[in-house]
Image 1 (cartoon, rainbow, N blue to C red):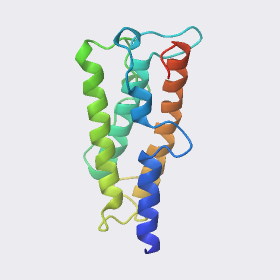
Image 2 (cartoon, one colour):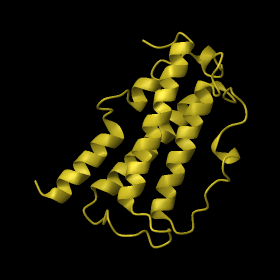
Image 3 (cartoon, rainbow, N blue to C red):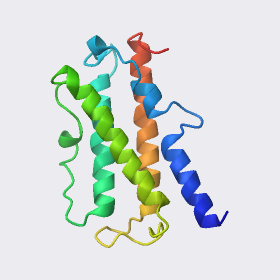
Image 4 (cartoon, helix red, strand yellow):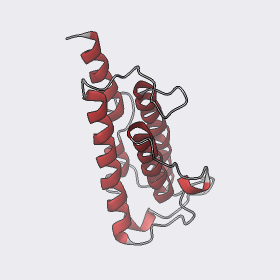
Length: 158
């Protein structure tokens, strides 16, 4: 296996496998509907707000990476839902599906041998696809950890 293929494989493992921590699927699996909008005492965000923040931020990184015309949401207010509860019961599953779809697209971008991981993104400020993949993995891991903690505080973790 070439160094390039090995790097791509390691990046995608970092993005999806969890390795030393819970995966996204672990964190959202079997989340009780009645707790999705609850903020435990001392927590800043509900499970819904964390899920939506994960989805929005990851989508923004993906779109920035592949579309020069992409406009990022306004920071920080458009990266976090104001309401702690989902607007309806279907919103949670829709957000989970969108997160998974965008994560798959990031992994496909990283895996594509035509993608130069080290080239500067033409419309960026020095960013590379490698940097954006690492940023995604880091950001996702951080907030997935928060989601796990909030679930524990709500008594909804395995």
